[in-house]
Amino acid sequence: MLYHSTRSREQLCGSKEAILKGLCADGGLYVSDDMLKTSLDMKALMEKSYEEIVLEVFRVLLDDYTEEELQYCVQRAYRGKFETEDLTPVTPIGDSWLLELYHGPTSAFKDMALCMLPQLMSKALKDEEVMILTATSGDTGKAALSGFQDAEKIGITVFYPYQKVSDIQYLQMATAEGGNVHVAAVRGNFDDCQTGVKKIFAAKTGEFKNKYQVALSSANSINVGRLVPQIIYYIEAYKQLVRRGVISFGEKIDFVVPTGNFGDILAGFYAKLLGLPVGRLVVASNENKVLTDFFRTGVYDKNREFVKTISPSMDILVSSNLERMLFYACGCDCDYVAGLMKDLNEKGRFEVSPDVLKYLQDVFDCGYATNEESKQAIAGAYREDHRLIDPHTACGYKVAKERGAAAPAVILSTASPFKFAKDAYESIFGVLEGNAPDGFAYMDALSERTGEKIPEALASLKTKEIRHKDVVEIAEMAAFAESCISG
Ligand SMILES: *Cc1c(COP(=O)(O)O)cnc(C)c1O
Image 1: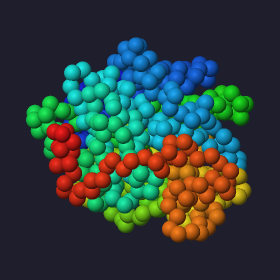
Image 2: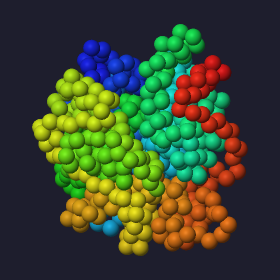
Image 3: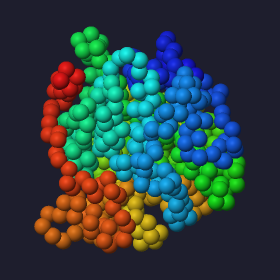
């Protein structure tokens, strides 16, 4: 498998290099033309365990790793870190299904990829050292900090938008342990953090390498090493439904995916390319519905008000991984993608051709939930379907309901409701009485009223020490990163 930039084929590399670099030198994302020529024997995968499916997918897509290296990665990634026996259980909700992706160490779906990425990176490294730079809208931060904690030869620096993450997300990051982890809050929104990190990569990579012999890399959802592990749970969900006789092998099923940066749903597209019988992939957005508008009209326009919602991990106006989808949708034409990205950079908008739009509309369906609709969806899921869901999953639930009972789907459930306990609680039961109840009071109340158990990783946050207190301006991000590398 050879990887190259979405914007040019000038430099080809294997998956190890793509994983170490994260982002291509020209600003594009790593893709592989071979993806279109590759398929897996999906029927045979229905008989395999989660870890065996990981291995089968990796052997094909990450084929420059040795068998021993892949075995090492798989054994270290998930064992002993999940609260359920099945890593990703599929459970009923109304006429549809929830694919529960939140039973890992930080109670959100980012764990599925971020337990694996550090293993893949450490096996790709030779003698060099690496600093991971990550911008997070909340969940990635802690999942990355947890995944990379005390990794050998790898440090990690996480930037998150100051006062724009939940109480609990804040505590998860501020209490992160490990000698190699650094955290700063940035006075700006998530897009500012993401743009700031991209600028550091563009301006500082050479300088840091010369001065400190440290390479920069990313753990963002643009990394091939995050995308590929996310393919597995689509196959796993399908397997569970086949095994239970809900569908027979070969029958297509739709997946509804709460979407922000477009990484999760792109992995669903990769699963489809590899031969999984996927029907529609449904992009579910929140009130920042730039993707809904794009899939309906072919015009991507980020020139709009940024809305702060109760699903902060989807508060995104530039969905980075969409670039990869554009690459496949236009017949792998790098120049075409480069042109669109130039428009996005210069004008904040681009428009795809009718052919590309048609391709996209055949693969994807879309919808969104306003903030108010997300709250109603949480209440509705609880009252009608007796399921407690988080505000991100609620966007998927709302969009799935809208499509109707004739289109049963697997809704990807991306976070534990206890991670967003205040919004979940208030949506169902109204405001909690008491003197300024904090995130923990809401967790306890939510658990008491619903009878559901608080995940251990969240319950234990209460007693942990605050270790990271830095708040920086956008313009200070590079200096902060340098201090982490030099220190
Ligand atoms: C990151 C995240 C999403 C969005 O996933 P993308 O891959 O960015 O589209 C949805 N829900 C939660 C809880 C998340 O953390």
